[in-house]
Image 1 (tube, one colour):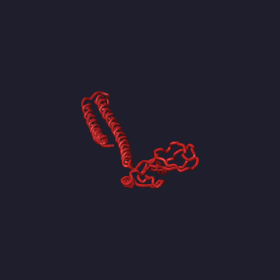
Image 2 (cartoon, helix red, strand yellow):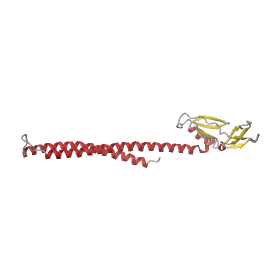
Image 3 (cartoon, rainbow, N blue to C red):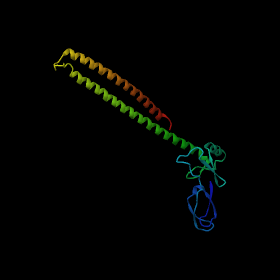
Image 4 (cartoon, rainbow, N blue to C red):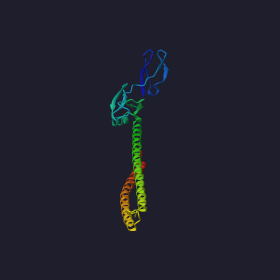
Length: 209
């Protein structure tokens, strides 16, 4: 793409390839060194390029903003026309637009994939922490039941009563089983959640970026 600027010293119009912008050469009119300045690209509206932030270089001016679909249509008829995005570093032939657009879409999908992986991994770590807490509670229930069973049978006189011991141990066992059943149900729920998370992570890795 041909671009135009003026000599920094004598204001002589200079035509050059846009890819040579930034180069220094001797002006053919006055002989002084001058900087080739790239055509102005309008500034962006934010850090991320949005559809509708595109421009084309037409009749020595930036025309736009345009939608990506408009640039795709132009690229079929005028592949040598130059385009850029708002705030972009340079003008690029429209023949490269579809490839650049696909690269941008792939980059966005890859970023979304990374964000989703982080989200699922965080959720998995939270559920694993919950499972460790449940396992610790189950161990605590069993340990407390053993200690209580060992101390069962002492009557109000401080003497061992085998009948009392049997009754107390049945009650201790029943409470232990009830507490463990509740915790086992919680663990089954967390196992189901973990299985679903692993399924989502596996599917995520299998998806194209």
